[in-house]
Length: 495
Image 1 (cartoon, rainbow, N blue to C red):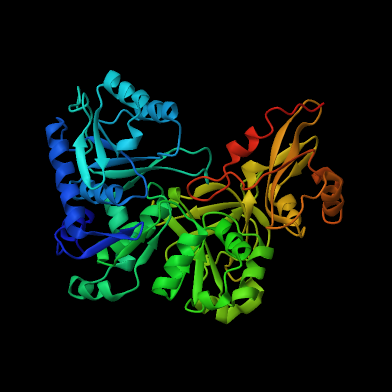
Image 2 (cartoon, one colour; image 1 turned 30 degrees about the horizontal axis):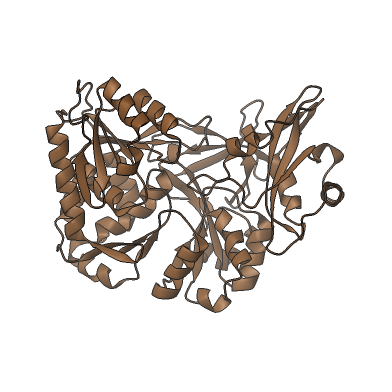
């Protein structure tokens, strides 16, 4: 099989008139993609880089960023992915800390703060404007090319499955073998890909889910519809216009589709919907399948594993039926799973809940300890229970947020809920809840919410503070933004 850079070179050599990416209902051709990649290569050469230098890519979900990614991969650059969804001050600090040789970012991300920080650090800057790559005035050249890497990597910030978020490097070889090989289409058959419904790209290209959903269709020659971020109208529009046989949704999107009251006929083309990246409430899962008759196939993975390590399939659903409802599936080939005691680290028997550990063949032969609570049953099905490091220590009680969030979602007025721990002078921590309401529902009182919860959880689990918001704060990956949630309670003081 061709290497990752070879496949990118081949993709950029496609018929220039062939449509590649639809964005805002406008098609970008492979000729335009190749033009930007070539311009970027020329700008990089002019900046004074050495082969093997690290390039920071501040990737937005826009055709220019996708073209830049292909161009950097074709050039065998080591790439550090950087989230653009932060303040100018935070972005500048992030880039200075990473210390790349060159930054490639959308023109709008070059604020005065960012440009000044790059100039002071001797970092070159290349701006993506429409489908052009141009040198940022004053940042045409790097002052010191610095260290090089013999083997190029793509470095992504983890989401925290194995501890605090941290940079994680994935080699070109790993991407080629484990991300692309299972979905590879022979070159002789790639011409037929143009007739397939376009793939929908809605996850941030700068994270592992984005890479997994973006690179295979682009390199196989399938057309793509790109959303700048996930929205129900954007997802629905793709479904109605192109009628794909399968689709995906972020876990939060399942409830959002239910709330939008989309007609079941619009989902009739689907045989299944895939989702992962975060737990899905079983009540929401069941309500969706009952309304639309489309099975939801859960999966589990992380950047540290190089992608997914378990997956539920239609075949497993047909074989096991409702007995495995809520499972994230069985281990993928070569993957090993075990559940360990959180105190002793000793493996637990099937059916016992504890800390999940994984051997991912993409990453090597060692066990990777996660911060996730899970259960592995006798038939090898994994059930994800939540994050151990999110536990709230209320006096002598350990509370898991999902044990409170699940019952909250059973309240008829609540569309979404998240629970976090906030400081308490007497107890150390206490639970606090943020909720959003279903369309047209009146806000329940705190007394009503507490009475509802007392029917399902012990008194120790009742939140001491509440916030009602229009929408839960979320990251670009549609995960709940926990730091932003905690900030909602910064003014609270408990005694």
